Length: 165
Image 1: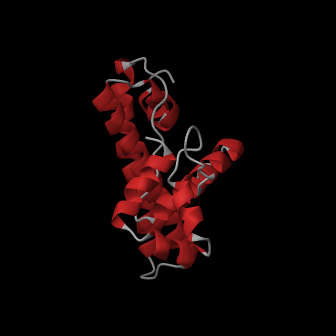
Image 2 (image 1 turned 60 degrees about the vertical axis):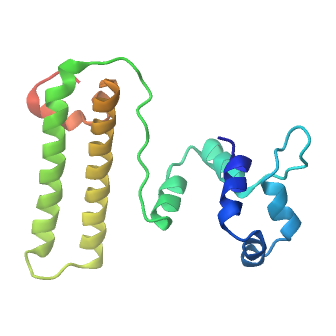
């Protein structure tokens, strides 16, 4: 689905007038965002396309992570390769267990003094996000039968189990 198509769908359930007022742009600009930039429409580069361009140019996924966090979720990058490597399945499973153990360790150290500092909170959040990412990647690989991405995302598991990385 193209960005202008998504915006057109969103505008069916939201007020373009309210969106224009909130963003400080004209109502006609908001409507142009929902038009195709090619063909009949005189569409304007919309915010979604601009964000996509920033991500493409910078290669920095923190932009997406920030947006997802603001929307109440988190970003998980899809595996790119499509060649299954089932021999890595057991070490990858062990990697998830190790990631969870690492999270519990960070929590235990932080809570040892019955107080969680701001830095400890950030450390816990970082480890939690890593665990969610690794686990989501594993689940997606299971669903697709594609385990090659696991080699890149769980090197600790391979080292711990003695499997080749």
